[in-house]
Length: 372
Image (tube, rainbow, N blue to C red):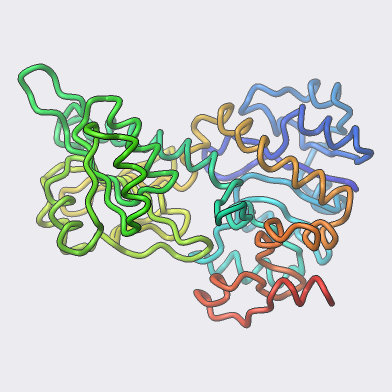
């Protein structure tokens, strides 16, 4: 199969879909790999390294979209990229379609076969292709929140870990999954006063056992959520419903009862955000203020630590890419029900139920596509 990897063009996105090492793995299997020039510069991977791996360097993304059977990316295709996609082509990347009707419509219109990293499953309902970026984003959320809390950045002027004789900052993490667990680890490590909210008793037991006295747990009902958020210096939104839009848990009304200069970090922004006042921001302009509350809503947080993120992502995406290239998408998905969960759009139809429901499309089950 001819596989192409264009340079990412989203604002301050420095990751790359294939490292030179991943390109070599694909080439060893008999595939042809095309890399857009300078695609790996954000992780200090040079064109020469890709050439040494056996890849072909092309000057423009147009060549990749026109000639390659599978396109491997990191972030969702931007509008100019979507216009280049074509019927029968495989797109393998993060998509986050539920809160993005324009992208969904244009992918449907293109006829592309779109496999989304974030909905590929693993044993026990895990999301193994999302997990490493959730780990990165969870850890980064505390770094970002700590910076936003500084007075010069509009925050309360609170040091999360405090100092002897001064209370530490209060961090509230909404959601005890991968993002929330990693956020809590970082916050607790800094010495902050950490509270984790979740609705799943098993999750609360797991995080409670892990953190012991270093963090508190509370069941996430309306009263507990309100109480925790209003007393917090930093609130991290770490809620995920796979493939669907995130629920709006912190309302605009609640902001008025929060402490002036408190910070909201919405890690769920890729799925529409879990705060009512959230809107996507970029690394170039990461924060804004609503009702004296600082909002950090960068939609590609791991892009800021591109080298760590790219290698962590390639570790989990490459094995599926190898199988798709070896077998073809239909056989690869047919042989692996977990990979089949990643099919979101195919040949003008939406094949992921949560996306179809959120955006009012007719839903075609993947099983029907694979047996057609």
